[in-house]
Length: 380
Image (tube, rainbow, N blue to C red):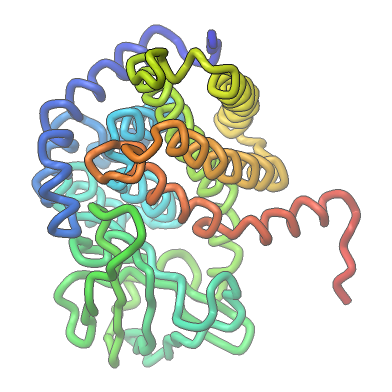
């Protein structure tokens, strides 16, 4: 499929990302999956190569490259290389943009250098035990104590939870208000729980976080302490677009690997790909992934132009995550028994894919958003 979204500089950047992954990530993936986390050194090396916070203003040490297509390239190449369980873009965009959008000048001067170099690894803490997507039911609270906020509560399923240094923590500041607080490694009362064992994404550390009378200085509040809901909503469209890009990249990589496998693997003296059932499945998957890619690329262009509708981000996330599930399942089936073996990448892609229909908003939540955009809103 010929894609028209990228320019020459994006393709040169893609080559540099590929070289970086082959040298610094791919050889270590088995080790990192075994230990349940990547080495912090990877973030430092990514910083050395200019892959972190590319959008940050030059006055704070960034490159000032505010073009989401570069982040799209990073997402695609990480999944192409089989490194999708390294959440570098969680640092770059999912969490980083909270700083980019809402941090004041003093906070940018204080935190940007470490984020750009890879010395400071970011995470975001919203989800709580028993609440899931229902932010209104959040139990973590912050109390204004004059010169600081006192934070109490717990979070779960937090990406970069073990290796992270700086967390954007959502907490109730009133009956109907929410604030975003910057909690730093080493703050008294801030503790991490266990590194959670998951179905997939084995190299991505996912942890529980606990806050017991954590004194958060007023200088560590992002924006205004009662506008957290508004801040979260502003970032959701991009988060869902990122998720859609990842899902589609994983599906396309699985298809390419399966095409190679079925051409080489023989059954009854003939390549698996020579059977009509195999050809038809491969043709269907190629069609669906190409059509999805065209929509994703348009969404990226809209996002770069500053007007990606929330319902389009939801459509992209819903369709690509559901498509990913179908594609990796079909690809594993075409691998036969080999597909169930962890030594084959399709086995890992299958396990990694299952979370896509859950994080960044479940498929059910996406359908609700899309339905409301159609006028099907029956809330009281």
